[in-house]
Image 1 (cartoon, rainbow, N blue to C red):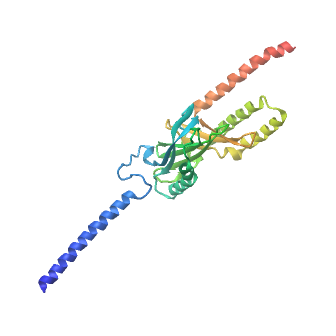
Image 2: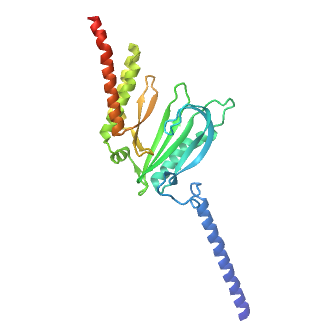
Image 3: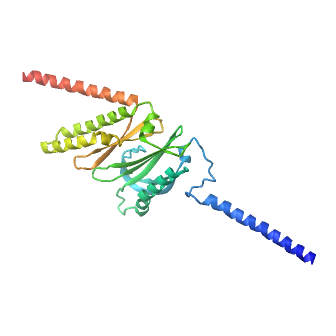
Length: 286
């Protein structure tokens, strides 16, 4: 009887150890295969690279023509270029919320796009990510293909230490300039756009330009400027302005002391040239 009982206990113990091994192995495997779909276990985290915190969740190559602001490509003509949708690989509610927002906005759009039979260009979505100190910047650009192409941007900045999302004011505070100066810079740039529009405009168009200028240079609009640091560690500002026909235009500029100084120098030269050309004309009229 004792021999039978011992045999039963040995079998039970062996089965228990086998079960633990099986379930333990299964659980470990599931941890490495679940999550964002990125091979996090096979690629060690490099805390000095932005790509360690951002992955490409979806990519599709499509023909595209034109320029792309954030990646810097110029003069593309029906080139097959990647359309990419990113996902943040950060812990915390902020990153999860942003990932859901990005997925909802771009996944269906990218999945349903098919390469046109005649290879004509289609809209493009791509992103850049940079890491400067503890600040991770993710910028998504949606470039449309229209008679007048336009870009729309989503900008996300995070502190990789805390996982918290940073505001535009936080980004400017970490730069070498001030928030007020960046908004004044954007205001000057917007005014130049409308100045150029007014040159050959009729009275009706001028009235619409005046209205668009008032809206676009308002404090409310300038407060919506977005900021991030590029790979050169320079502060970038993205601002938008209202077109005469009601459409919204976006522009991307570096906002450093050097660029602001260069712009003012250019304005001064333009003003001097204008005065020089007008002076003889006025003298002749006399």
